[in-house]
Image (tube, rainbow, N blue to C red; front, side, top):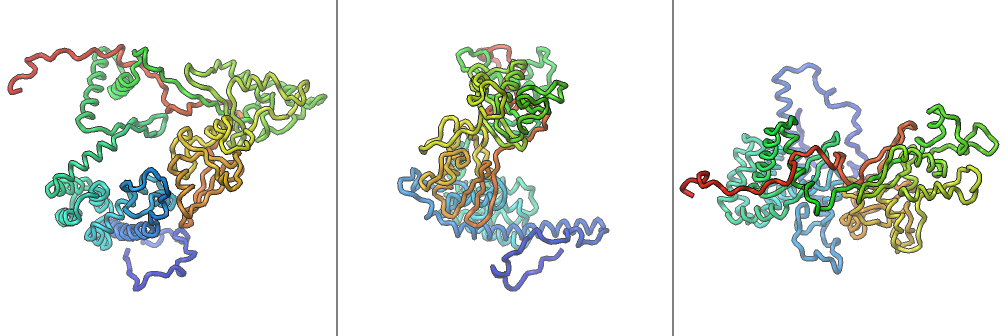
Length: 537
């Protein structure tokens, strides 16, 4: 594999219409079918060098996009953060929404885009020798990225001369180090030249401490707590001691399970009667096909009267596929729920989301609303079965603020912020008019969507962004650079025989209670034995 430089870069007109994914031949087809071990090893080295050169090109593309997005268009009179220091992913003088645009361009998370912006701006502005090594293919991207990470936003107050000295000390041997070692070397060299920098980095790291949840699949999530090292070690030792004590008492679970249970007991304190109990907000997904005439017939039952025309014996009133929710649907669902004994948990809530076969949300109702609809039936046909709707999408309102039923419907439909790639929960989001209310946009469910505060501000204040919506809630977002991404509501595809299913909208998939490890409140620590602390003290 050989990289051939060109004398002049292509013009925008020459690049127009080119599709980087339109090549008919895959790269492996361009190589010999049989290669020796040495040829494969050489090929891997060439690929690594080519990736480094492409990374250098990416640095220039990102910084070029940043140069076209000045922060002058972001500021608005009365903004609370006017004059605030830019944070990660926002180099000085650059739009605060650059990372959001880059995330859609690259189809990555905003966090990854922010990190890339920091790395690229640092390489272009503060680490010219490292960038030159990337361009030459003599330093790979993982090691260049490691150096840039340590000297980016976290080292923003370090003098450029100190950064240059650190780069000169680290770079010559960086290619021979492991991926982690350049980071350690940069920190050591930086501390030797600017002791105050280490204190600033520690203070920044402490301000970034937080507790987050990371779903990892199979109903399991990671609870991640970022804290000072000494506190993390103390917490780990305490949880381990609780687990080993339970093991010594005869608990046959694995030690890792016992540590998890001990942590849960320490945090939730099930012995504390004064602490509010953990509860859940439960949503039952109800596919209409699970309440259709086909289900009754599949169960061996005769066709119910609710699905028959007056005087008919076989033809149902309508296909139940995206049709309105009738009283017959509601009564059948209530029969199932009564048999299951499903009720709202203490201190929690229970609601039902009716979906069409393609997953489109048709209606949301509480248990009380379902029972009222079943009792009243169709007001136009109180004495005969019919296909008239008794539940549906909340109607539009005349004012700016959505109704309570619209809020509930939209939170259930969207689940998260609808900006492509954003996972912030809908209950923390604003309900935004896609077509602004001031421009005639209706306060209706097909013109409203959930946007977190950041992406609500982006839509309102960032220039060049376009948002459009479809009647089914599909949101299309176009960046100022012309990249379009689509965000669709959560779909719940079900087979006709899938029945109902409920899930928590708030807690993770794990049950909120597990087998206890700590049988009661932990005993207070005993007074230390003087013999355990011999001199010198």
